[in-house]
Length: 561
Ligand code: ATP
Ligand code: MG
Image (cartoon, rainbow, N blue to C red):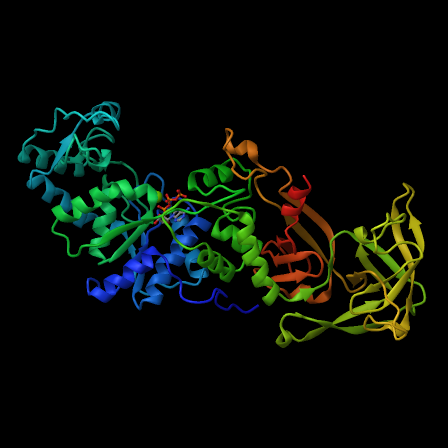
């Protein structure tokens, strides 16, 4: 499968790109520099993909660059496993930061010095109020805050205390460093926010070098400035933090003046996009891991067989705005189907097999038949599929007593086997329990390739595989992880899990070409959907994950009620 760029036409336009365009035109910005700043406390999800596509996309479109920066300021929750997974996922999505890989922790010494700078300017103080008291002193949206008794500490005392915090003299939580801004501000973020806290935890990169760590607010804007970021894009929850972002930039001797812009975060139906909740699914064993194919993580989507190009296309189509909206998961599915329809190789696979013996086909005989690889792509060519006397068809494609609208195989009825022949069912064999175990059929040798020279028609075309040549496989069928559009809306989101989100079929039969599919490659099983080879498979025992059904059966089921 080859990847091409998204089919979305024209240049993307949105309010952030308009700002960038204006800044370049007016000379306020010479070269646009953006960044994607994940906190390595979980795996990336499709919401992060929106931010990645935006930040790297803008850099690419406007001849700038985009940094990958780990926002690693909370060692209590961050791990190397997450750092590695994030790097792999951003690369897989098709983006490259070149040599511009950074960590907020690269700046710990500089950030510490800037904190001392604020103390020396009388703009920061060490506070030993406990968290509950501090909350109480902070006031509410309608009431101003009150000054902490520590607010009046002198510069020397603050400096001494802060240095002793760094030296490890105090327990975690014993005191914090706060910026001295305005306890009466209408914006609670400006009521003397905490900028440093004590954490006696090993950091994945700086190990035990530090026991004081900057808060997100203190690390983020200053890291942007150090990296000369021009446009620092975040989600709307940070709009109220912007005055603090700007205050810190104005009050510190930083080398550049980045600006923060906010956009709506991506929300999607039938899923949760919060690392905390995703971590809960992993920790409670509801899924097999962060890369479970039902997870909305990049690694889960990849493992399910969702191509990176389809995710980029989805991000381009949903665009960027300031108004929060929830996207239908069906919109992502549509991008995936559109991409895979154009790019995925067609193959035949029987998931719930029923044996068919073609009685008038020579015993021990066999032949190779030509089958088209992708009718949407003439360049994809064709392949040879073995045909023989014993075949498997899909159990669902046969009914002994067919109702009116069932046109597929039934006793006495003729259907087409794709790329092969017309066959007619002449006999039904049942096991002791009365379950159909085998069909007897005849074929018409005149219909080779699937057409009758006398022009007679059949109403159904079935897929099949030759029993002797088939590769036995396990196929995992996935459905939405949640069965309501807004998981958790009525209480605990775990109560909304779809109990039927995974069905494992262990006795599937695949055409021989599927033996050689590399893990990660997605093909179309004719009439069934798109399936991706999983790394759990072995050379003669492949495992496939269903990436997507061919049509939106979920929407149809819902419409039917
Ligand atoms: P979560 O809320 O899932 O825990 P987060 O915002 O804490 O995510 P970060 O690692 O801090 O995760 O996010 C890195 C970047 O990705 C940030 O710039 C953030 O704004 C952006 N981002 C995170 N979630 C979304 C989302 N749902 N839609 C768009 N951007 C997002
Ligand atoms: Mg965050």
